[in-house]
Image 1 (cartoon, rainbow, N blue to C red):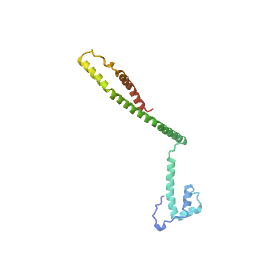
Image 2: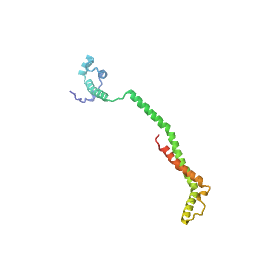
Image 3: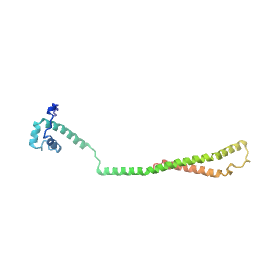
Image 4: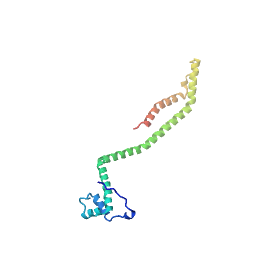
Length: 176
């Protein structure tokens, strides 16, 4: 049986001096069976304390229900989670400079590859034009294009680039 709270005029809205005692009895689970007899009699005659009991009892019941339904993990599980989070944070923090260094290495490797291609382009152009001219003329009497002084270092550099580029990409993009 729930009592409806009726609004009181503003001049009646004073605090009762026993209001703290009523809240204390309710919070310590002494209300109404183990409370002092004079407090029970006071609540029966005081409208403010009756309102306090009604509201505070509803709040206390809601709190108790929420407490019973709460699924709180054990302290060991919480400790384990905190340790794992700390380790993951430490790994992330330690791997940040390595990732930056790998990124810089890839950019520098691309810059070197572009510089080598830029400086080697005249030799590559001559090589391609000489081989197409030989194929078009059908003559084999011309000296070999690989006899130039730049051909062997260029071939080694291109071969190394073909081997190193996939390895560098694997190292940079791997999640290890």
